[in-house]
Image 1 (tube, rainbow, N blue to C red):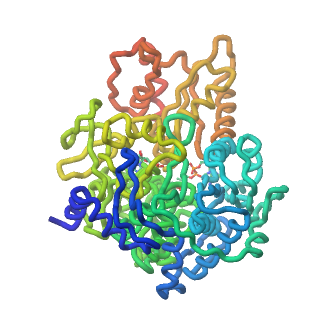
Image 2: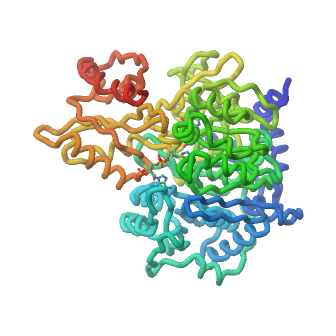
Length: 631
Ligand code: COA
Ligand code: AMP
């Protein structure tokens, strides 16, 4: 048996032994004697008697071990033309001082803090400062509109918001303060303060409850790490569900630290002193796990990149970063590679940057299409590793464990399940399917450490959303199959979640905005294939009787509304007026069937369809989209 098989088997046969051994990579205030607590099943808790501090594990312990001079974080910001480097000792001091600043505002263990910041080092400092105090951070991505921010403020009820005055997109400076002010106007809950990091590109005007980051921090005393229970929440990260209301995914302290440290070594083959780069955003789970926590937990150097893959300044932006900082492995979304490939199909820019340090490209966040896989492999000359995970899981469900035992890669597959993930393919009745048979991808409970224990303040929603469909399993929402070698092929979501440029969105929330337009009688929003962003949202709209708006005017109105209500990140531009929407006899709109037709699949028409003629009339409207995009 190889190292992978051995680890995987042991993790399922002896989860206690496997995960207690893994826990030794973490410094505990009180080491756990038990791995899993199943007394509240199906809500499981990992390391119920363990006590630790995650910020201490990410920073102080490396300094105490004599590695204070090692580089912890490299900030590289082509959009501002600036950069900075922080050693472990420097980052610890920044974090301790900002933790003191938060404590001076009354923030303590269990309090929530919303972090609304772009890719600046202070975002990492704010997250780790919360962790240091045992406070719970909730980072909100900068591309969301005020209403989305307000929904998160009302659910998390933070004591303080920590923000920057602006974020920088290639074409514009995004002022954050007006977005926060508008969110606070809408939200019921009012935090006591907003701490604002002033950036020179657009300084914010501060109101009576606002505090300047620099002034506040200058007056603060450094704070020590506060020991917390392993089961205490470290953060809440909101993600799109099938309804408009975002789900507050909870991450605990102990299981998270153990799982991430395990993956850094065994999946990504990264250890102390290695330079690791995740090109994502701290607002997404990939950013939480692999820009901030995992690399620091193992004493590696993490690159924090504020820019895009292309146009900052050119298609060689990524290769420059790898070359300049000696990056050993890069983790990003396939869409970023497609963006580079589009403007530099022959990868001419690569020749300018020697990349001897570079060993592996890791891709996740959406399906890795074989064309992108082959392009990256051919031009970069390193293994291209697809791996599959979700905000809920916090770390890869399926991957190629490069550190433990590199396995052959197969285009289209995220390789094999990682330890603790008992992945099964189920049919509609919950029967486990055989190799090659496609069905719902589910995971037998309990989930391993690091996966969500619940949703914030809503155990019932956690059970209803993930555990109810199949007794004893977690429903991933993805469909796919496993081949004879045990390789997992993830084919896409089976629900109304879509993935736009690696960003997860709910078609339900876009539909709610579209439906609110006075001219709209009913609508459906589906995700359709896009060669660059993977998927794009597309609205099919039936007008109210007597409404005489043109398709162009309606499109302008709806695009503006989605941008205003959800945010630019929805990348919503596609609106078609149609005569009717296909439905079942009970009135359910056949979104999945339309999606299949738009993507060129031979989707079976459900026998419950009310009027097949409606679907036939729609086929030409749906199909040309695919044709024009592929061409
Ligand atoms: N703050 C404000 N606006 C933002 C934003 C942010 N943090 N991030 C994106 N936006 C805006 C963009 O400016 C764009 O606005 P526009 O409609 O005015 O042009 C819109 O949201 C759509 O953004 P996006 O879909 O990201 O398109 P893009 O053209 O800006 O970039 C990619 C496309 C592929 C280069 C980029 O999405 C990317 O690098 N993605 C891969 C990495 C990643 O972050 N993955 C996440 C999980 S791993
Ligand atoms: P998020 O929660 O934003 O990380 O999005 C999770 C969803 O992204 C998953 O449920 C999948 O639909 C999709 N996804 C992530 N990684 C992959 C992958 N490697 N292959 C296919 N789909 C993926």
